[in-house]
Length: 384
Image 1 (cartoon, rainbow, N blue to C red):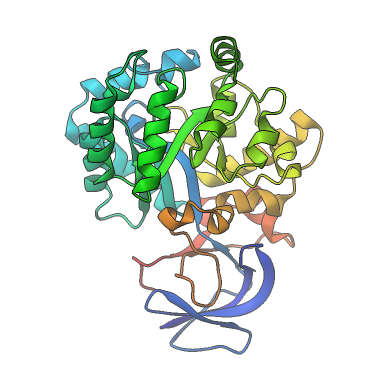
Image 2: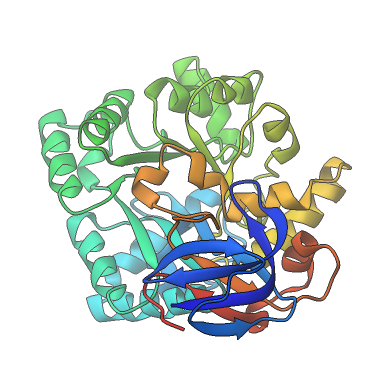
């Protein structure tokens, strides 16, 4: 048992500012109160206590080719099976992939991330490699698999169904690349089987304008519209919505993840975060491909804060932005799989303690803090 004393706590789903102490026993928060003092006392002297980060979208496998292919198009970089990353993964040894993923996970753990949702290439083998790589690292990967049988204009749906069922025995869900590579029949199969097994289904939609227009021309619906109709649990990017795309998403129960730094690097646009929030969408934020971005959530948050301000000439609330990296997932249906906690009595102890440089704790984290400013990362795998 220990007590984090004299901290500035960002409490609950809404990150409400409280000057209270937190008592932790056997990985659980058992008390939050000014007068609480039990076990080992850790006086943090005005430091900010924030829920640890969840990285809402990653491709950790391409850690093996950091910064290769810069300036290439989205398709040239990531479209299966001939994108730069897919060729690199096909030619890499298992040990190379595992070592690169381990390095990235340690980077994330040291920068306050305790959970990440990964689109795992390589079928069953790819899922197993990430499970092996994460074994001794204090971080939880939510692993979404995929299989080559998903792709093509006329896939064998029997083989697709078999591949999905095999993946769901070891993965947390399924995540094909996008609607440019799969048919609606495959999409529907994935969603149906994931729902049946209580697993997470996710897909990229609306990342580029050209993908949106091609989908609209061929199917009479945008990629975002097809994603909504297919009922994937989680839609990633939505960088280039057309017409009523965002309104459709707001009326669904689907989770949204945005990746501003990745979209900027690939020249595909800027997510309309202010409009999303006006419509009641509460997205997560992710760092996307490690080959083009560091997995550091501090960098993602600061970039997003300033990008939204200059691009849309409208400020985004720093507390709302910080929720995208911490607590938005906690009241979402996908949290049954992610299992991320808020700072509340009875919750798992999953938080970071950071130096305070500012009277605004939200901007302090987004605008001032770096990995070196984390005093403690508390999670179920760590004892203080």
